[in-house]
Length: 198
Length: 198
DNA sequence: CTTTTCACATACCGATGGTATGTGGGGTAG
DNA sequence: CTACCCCACATACCATCGGTATGTGAAAAG
Image (tube, rainbow over all chains, first blue to last red; front, top):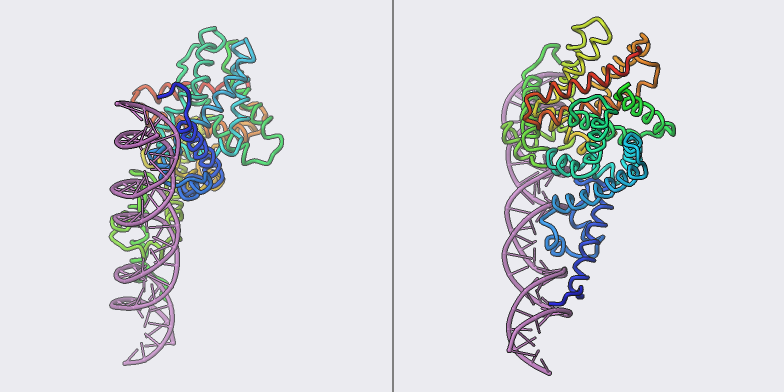
């Protein structure tokens, strides 16, 4: 057993990556139900045997793809927030970043539309809590503790805002209104602003 | 052709009702993907021939079920709103009624989770616009025109609130917190209140 | 009574997700 | 070097699925 990566392990990782990449592409394009395993394995240039060697089945592959997508969104949101020091700026920057990220077709379809239906809502929510929703909850908690927001239970508020932004991202992606983002942001930032202590 | 309902038409309607009833029950219990047509027709005590005589296929049956569910929710919301004369009371009553209605298992699964994935988001949104979302948009428009809400584009605001309430209903249904509804309502009514002109 | 129509039932099909088994080549022990 | 092993797949196969094409018997029309 070698300490460094052998040919075997390298090939394994490449196959897994190919399945995730093509699965993500096809799931995003045709939706979970519109894609067959045959299409995925053909695009990845492997066989079903390889797929079932790496994943437990079609839902498990989708779950892996979704985790990847959510991880990227969470990183984007966190990156936007970390560009600011002030807690309030961190919140607003994170929200704007989420709206922009949620408009991407693969995020939209995989994370926001098919995710809850395929994995079940509670499982989807668990993944979401580990991703961008966690950052939102954290930012709100910081603001309440800093006295910038009125003292209140953070969890319900986080859910309301999360749902609002999910829907807004879907609507923005479907809308062709070029001013859509600004209109949504105006309404959302107005809502956020109104939560501040005066 | 008789003016009154013949035996044929009566049987036809009973069969259609049975398919809708059992389809709704099974879709709500196992989700769209977890139910086969065989299960539905067995429960309705008919055959696949009957199903395809009344509906174009599985997605079309689901669409019919979803329209039924959405119609009921819209009626509930409208009924709660119509119990009040004041536009503001109409909005808040409608929102509370929606939160309560959205907690029902079949509404939750069929309308909020599987609906967008099965029909596609834009088709689902179209149905929603014809249902409770329409009442929300109307109520908000009235309030803006009456000067109770700050002048602003109503459509983005309606989307944000609709998304917030959808997510809130899903969370409430999954949560076992008995104070969940009150906490959510406190946060939501706070958000609504903050939109008022002062 | 004849004929047409309608509301299904029956029989069948290709494709799908899933499984059980085969295999070849790198890794390892001696 | 060699023999064995194991692992990362490939192949073959299966039950079930959504969907279609056709048959059928009773009610309605003429």
